[in-house]
Image 1 (cartoon, rainbow, N blue to C red):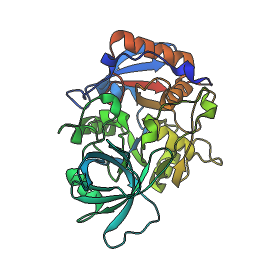
Image 2: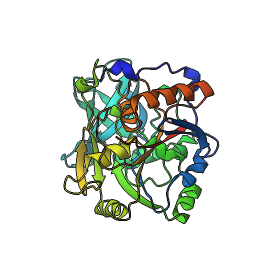
Image 3: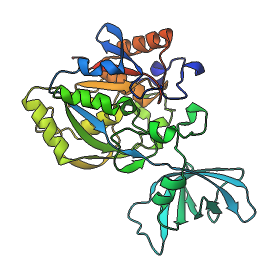
Image 4: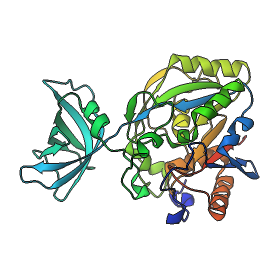
Length: 352
């Protein structure tokens, strides 16, 4: 499908630079076929059938941004730690990491950096600018990042992280650290809201998809079919696979909180058991656009996404292209807040 079909004008003033005062205080646009209604996140429990299965992404966001200086001689450097290099063992306190870097001069192999107590050396740089680093830490790199790192807010927010972001750019159910961006639909779910869901007999299932920077990468291809979709690691535990099977047995819907949950569930769909998933650990490069046949997810809570993005294409596949673009036009007209800290949409899946 042509990428330009997912373009729209997003005024800067419509981007939510900070979260709402209350975690569950956002607005929610309900798009159900031709119907558009204006609700609130706190109304969500009333929209969900009793005994539904709600699936969340329990990944935890790494405080991945560090500031430092080039050694010797100084010169400010900013590093964004993406992930440890897999299958490279820690040796004598040295870890190997992938990162992005910014400085006034290129960070080439051999560059030495002092970053918040980490002794860093650039050992390689890929064609797309990803650095491979050898890092010496007083304990572990993860421990230093947790203590001294900055929250990696998306660049479109146009600001540095602030103390409230440590809590608010993290879901209340986050578990294992591994993402450099939040699964933002989950930011709306307060503990109070989860308790209300549980009181209605709604089951909560958890998976993990480690959100990478590819989530924010713009689509440069003229056609989505030509887009090089980024890979993201995910894990479907056996407990969730069983929960989905139980939901199917009681004819209850499977509801995804966020596009990352959709990608994970659809990537793990069981070909031998319609509507179910297999326990799985690996990577997905699944690109969902109009024409895709959903196999697992029945309804979706999601935020408003950037123009020309694979996330917007996924929403259009789920709810229909024309209804989705009409909903975005309405949201802009009445002043909804967009992107990571913004308002939400509720989407039952369009029936084929």
